[in-house]
Length: 330
Image (cartoon, rainbow, N blue to C red; front, side, top):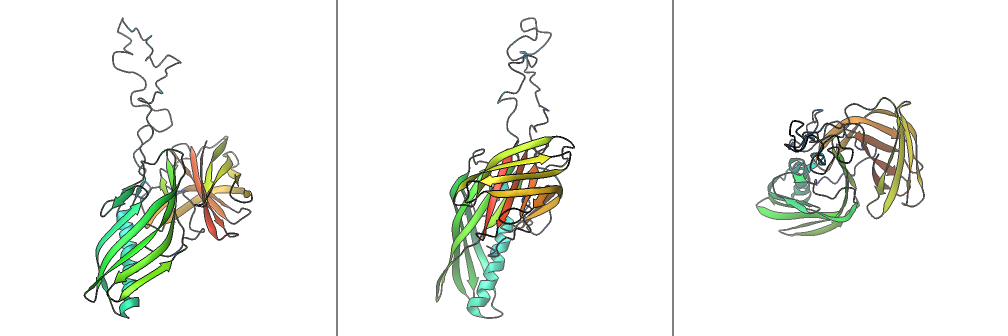
């Protein structure tokens, strides 16, 4: 429940080498390991199209010429059954969320009871999108592929005891979430907080934005070729379009966002090492990405997928004092 607004300087938007997620140790930097991927896009297949019996070259009845044969151009093994989407960990750390809630509860206790007053957290529940939790990580992998979901529910409820009295603190707002095969970006916008308890009945409006990024970061970038990425951009209220090109020969990239006010030119910048802290759950990811300037403020992005199939990033919109998230695939 940290109320500090995320800074764009730290958003390297997702670059990131190791995804934060399953760990509930919120203040630790995650090791550079990847979540399990069933079938990365390097063409390696578990079954390789060789279904039992149907593709047995020694079976006279099939003789390798059945429709299921991997050598048949019409069916090279890339069916939904043989080439399922990769399994990437898109979990939000419950432990990190709870740690932030405890810190805010202690500040609130001193504000209400005076210096030296402490509080004990009795319960904590968080809802993000379609999932709620009172103890386990929140898994966002169920969100539909490449569909921006606006106006998703976000709410935290904490019950704490201070000076013998129980207080209920609720922070609520909206979130927008976009998932790709190897990456996910969410904007979380708390808009209101309330405190109810003995002698206390307070409410406060909020205007915070947190950018949450999860996924499998690219460990080894392509060394040649030019790739065009297309996708979406959003400020939480509307949806725009992203077009971004990366030249891996020169190791530079540039692009444009349209549909969110005036066009946003993402000026050419070089590939480098970047990191991003998800302040909402205290997780950190590091990896390859690009940081540059735009017509509205600085931007940053990271590469995701075994072969840099995807990018995710943010623009620190200094003109409108907001954060714009974007994501695309090639």
